[in-house]
Amino acid sequence: MPENKLFLPEGSRSTGPYSLDDLKAAEESGAILEGIVLRCDTQHNLHVSLGGYTGLISRDQAVLPSINGSDREIAVLSRVGKPVCFTVSSIRSDEKGAPVVRLSRRQAQERAMAYLLEALEPGMVIDARVTHLESFGAFVDIGCGIVSLLPIENISVSRIAHPAERFRSGQRIRAVISAVDRENKRFQLTHKELLGTWMENASRYNSGETVRGIIRSVKDYGIFVELQPNLSGLADLKEGFSPGDCVSVFIKSLQPERMKIKLQIIEKLPPFLPQLPYQITDGQIALWRYSPPGFQHDPIETDFTASL
Image (cartoon, rainbow, N blue to C red; front, side, top):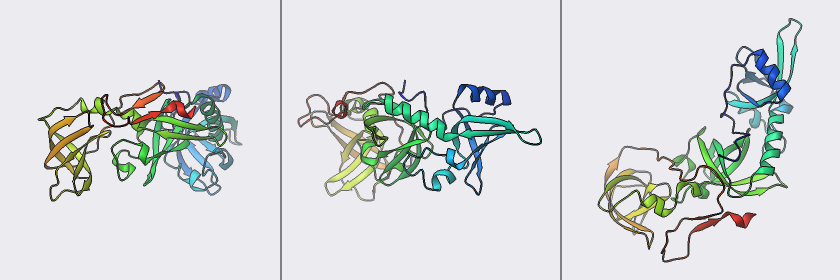
């Protein structure tokens, strides 16, 4: 089971509806709940749907200060229409007897941060949720709205031009902790180690088969076609094809000792989004070796113990 199961990314829990008894029980126990933000008022307070009630997260309780970018307005404004985690701080009645429910997202994040800094170590597999994509990587929620960067070079072995070729905003994924900076409260992430070694991916294919793939790059010596996020082959040059094209390819040969697959492009296909075939979904990785036994060059591997 992923190591952050106690403090899951926002969007992983039920968002209600909650009865008044549910909210009172959460206030007493300190349970972390979730709800959808309905609006952000002029004072940057968040109004959260609880079902039959509306809760209020004041601006100072909306984001943990130690989270990068928490001082920017967008950190609060961007929560509208999205789920947020929170604890119930208080339940009072107004002058008309209607319940006034005050919530704290910051308190939930403080507890999550303390736990994650203590519990997470390099090599641990965690749940994550993509919050937004940039050209240099994917920002992912690793627990209660605590966001870390997954650099583009760590997403898969097969190179991509933009994280949107792998992920979409809101997608739930797995990730691996590559380093923990406890002093600055930062987590470094990787992902490619979960998608299988060369042999694990290549074992799905046989010479003489025709399968589909995605062109990732065109060089003067050939066209690289991705068969899986961690597996690509090289096809002969052929006019009329560009990076991003989905194609059918004939497998001419597989050469584990050289970690090579020779392909022949047949034709273009309609666009499709490649699946993420996770080979590892939980636990902790010590050493991950991508290259197969008998590979003629230095092994391609990730040593997570080096960060301990």
